[in-house]
Image 1 (cartoon, rainbow, N blue to C red):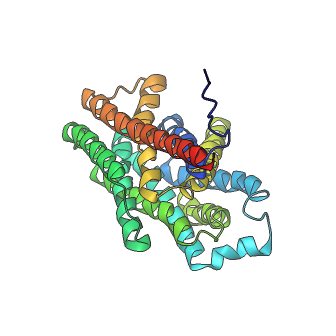
Image 2 (image 1 turned 30 degrees about the vertical axis):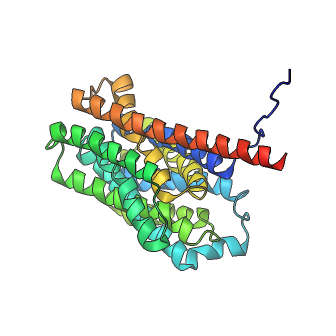
Length: 307
């Protein structure tokens, strides 16, 4: 009797690394509702100083990633893709905080769930990337989950807040696609520049004198985890997979963000949000599991062929 000793190599594929990185980024991003509800300062002040901390903490990985602090790395801010990243990041962060202050956390998360479809459209228009049938099926299930939530929560926030959330989603979809248009252009320098640019634009409208020690600590944590760490993880992961798939995995945020607010602040989500969230999480888990299984099958087949 012979034993089957075929084993999969311990090393992960680039795609699998991308999945892990994007999932970790999604978990960090999902804390946004908690941070925004903990703050007791105005939106303008939050936009400006959260961005400052985000930019400062991004300087740390910039010493080690994408060529370090070389002139070539920082020249990327003058590349068309770099300038596009700066514009999109600045607009996205302003809309994001503005939306959290002017509409419900659940509404922001729900509107963000449209990102996979915007990213898929941009990926097809700009990169001519074919969207896999499995991705479209999971995307359709996510859309169903969104419909369930929106049908019962429409009118729950202000029109301005929902519009800001939509602007955030559209600009974020571009952030997903731009690194794949110019994969050789570093992403961190434009992101760091956008953080300080956001501070310069919005600090005149805020009130730094209103920030006490408690709010400084929350702002620092908000910028470090929800801006810096999450963004580095996501950009690293998005380069390893199609834009629509990266955005699809990110839709887990639609469930986790209201969940953390409910768990820690007792902001109870409506039943429709729970039902729609179950549909979305199921779609994402199915899509990711199917992809991992396919990767294992292909690796096993290559191993047998080589043998």
